[in-house]
Length: 194
Image (cartoon, rainbow, N blue to C red; front, side):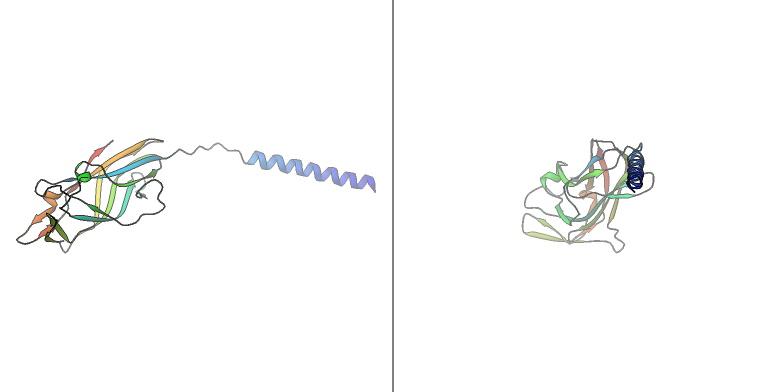
């Protein structure tokens, strides 16, 4: 009887050793995942007709910023900063001095290393331009207004590096002066990729 117990215990120990070797050996594989790069999207506004002044105001409501990958057209969301867990709607004054100097950050985030086609912004323009702090001029949109601005210029994201993209909106051409109002037809492009 003692010999039978010893045999069963020996077989159980051998079985555990074999299973341990299989489990440890089966967990090793050759796979390396690249580390992400960082993207930084800034707004630049061109305006020679309306001064960049704290009393002047024309806002854009931005609900979405995305990077579009070249190979499979997958869209990667870009949030307000690298610590954000979701995007909230942000309102940007296009006549802010930071917008003139291309230092108004619209989004920042981590992206997988790849080649990207460009950036998409989903916007809604403000309903008025405020001049000198008190004069309001209504802003209308065309009936066929498309809120999706597709900035197309190829750029790459590399591991552990930051790619800065400056998206430019030309207010001189985007705000078309009518008799008593402006018509908003956005003119936009990517002016810088670093």
